[in-house]
Length: 241
Image (cartoon, rainbow, N blue to C red; front, side, top):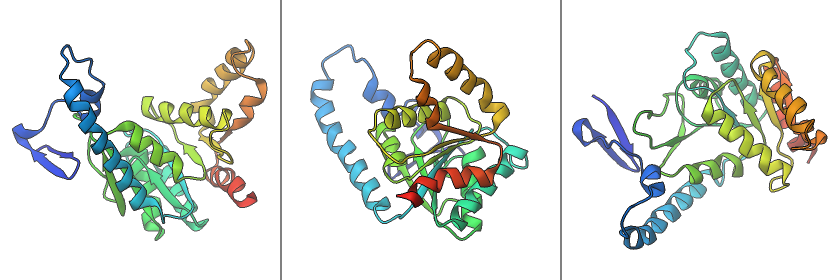
């Protein structure tokens, strides 16, 4: 039976909602009901920040790892994710992922098997939910923006394995935060030259070439095929600082 977590509440069967909390928050309501409901939502949002800060405040050094939820176990990409999680723990870091399946699961698996802290930051979604079994510190969020704050606030770097819209969303948000110096000493590493190469080429030969970004902005990205190098690059500035 399908399960759905709505904050601390577990729902099954016909009780599973067809919309998420974030969707309802952003819905363009045709009536003025939001005037009465939205102020109360602020308290729920506040509680999510408090719970997230409380759970992660003593986490210590950590790296956020992102990648596709659709990558199957046993594939080369999955095994690379396991290697990344393991090597991050061996380097003295906790591993933070979105807590889902695929490459998130792979990184959590590597971290947990190495005896480290394996963090999963889940999100309430109608069609995709569940914390993978390798997470040993998990938090479920209702609101994307609260969850995204946790990904950056408690990490010293970011490793992106091949992924889809969610991975790209986090990647470009991190790039924007570093470019604008909102966050500092935050390395961004892309693992997989064949996968990320076309995107990096477009950034360099279209955006930078047309002046949409500065040429030196490309230095914010590090691309490699080697999980060991990815870990070294993601942790280098923290060690330097």
